[in-house]
Image 1 (cartoon, rainbow over the protein chains, first blue to last red):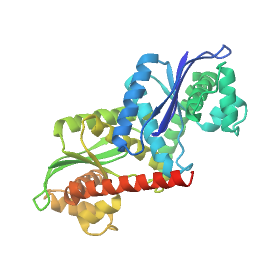
Image 2: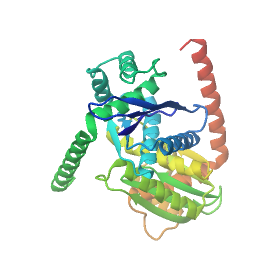
Image 3: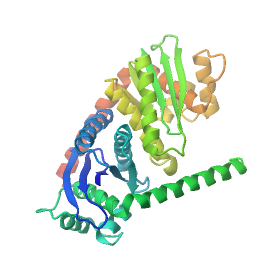
Image 4: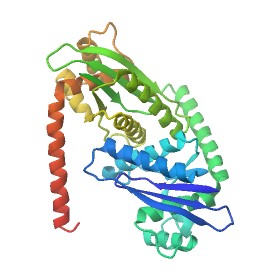
Length: 183
Length: 183
């Protein structure tokens, strides 16, 4: 199974492609960082990211795309660029018919280091070791994208399917409740 | 000049197309709301919005696209969908080489009602009157998209260009300052 991980961002968007299966050795296929200048208008930056991700997805043909789940409360100023970049990543995936899975930073850290509260340096060190890389991937966005792909391979698509089913049931229950209370 | 206004949202994305010039009569060309089901996975919703906006832009060939500026602090839960939908709108504009302008809700309200603190009903009433519509556009997202287009026509592209130039200078000054202080 081949997973393309995306650490979304407008200034730096990390992309890491990893091959592997549960219990098998992992292999890095590619790692890169798509950059855009903050002085460039946002629409052009989004288009450049769209084109770059489309090229990467077309070249590597991943079975799944893992994107970091964006939270609105982390940093109000930077969250917009992150949300916009993750929207582009999801759009490119949908256009290619490739399933998208979102993982939280805590899930990613726990998957690769065993602790959801691990520091960035520890994540980078584990990614370097797990993929048997001669040098640590830089910048942190590159290492994070690889960690996302590894997290997805290890958590397995099955877990995600269960989570998605549970989320659908929760959404249906919430909708039914909202209907009953007339909200 | 023809402006396509977008009130971004994943569940309901308002789109209004208005023709006019400063000091001339306004005319509504089209108004619609692109909807998607909250139970559908986000990547598919983004793709459906992309396709719908691409069709509308291709059909109406606007000179400019006006999108509501999204703020991260309004509602943490709904802001992600809004940010993602606005990213799709900007992306479609960039793909067609059409300039995008962002207007805040306050600017839009002030442009059509004279008060930046006007209520939704007042905005809808003024949009209906300004465009001489037989009935008020519903839902609010449709009226808001038309209000955005009107706001852009009235504020004029010149104002926006001045603002963009000022923003660029501010960004350059901030970057220079960050460089000096070693941040």
